[in-house]
Image (cartoon, rainbow, N blue to C red; front, side, top):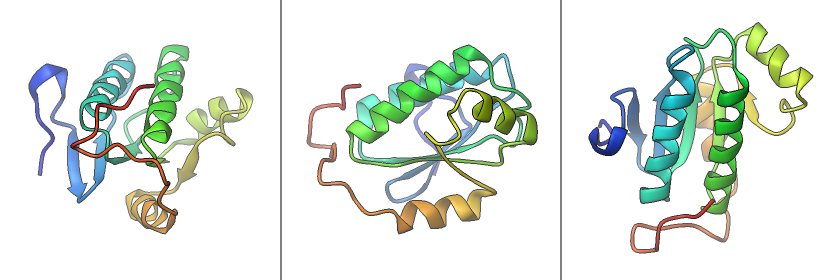
Length: 136
């Protein structure tokens, strides 16, 4: 099932399973714009774990890193989880140099990402569809 395309949502965002959104990030310079679309989706919908597939991303810019941190904070405020997968060595190097490798859950591939999401405990605070949008 594809996520809505209104309000700037792009077709690379898919509701993969109940409560889990898969986002296939494009390479720069579109990465941060796509992340902003995901932030908008989570603000409106709230109750989703987010898996970001970095397969097409060869480097992360400071703008993308800032968007990633905002998305992480928002997802966490909703009591959900953010998992990154398919991160190449150059991007992992950026995460390491900026000390963000300990901030994000980074796994090898989509299968590992979904296994990780389902193994994580549910938080006590969650934004449901009947709750007001998450703030972050």
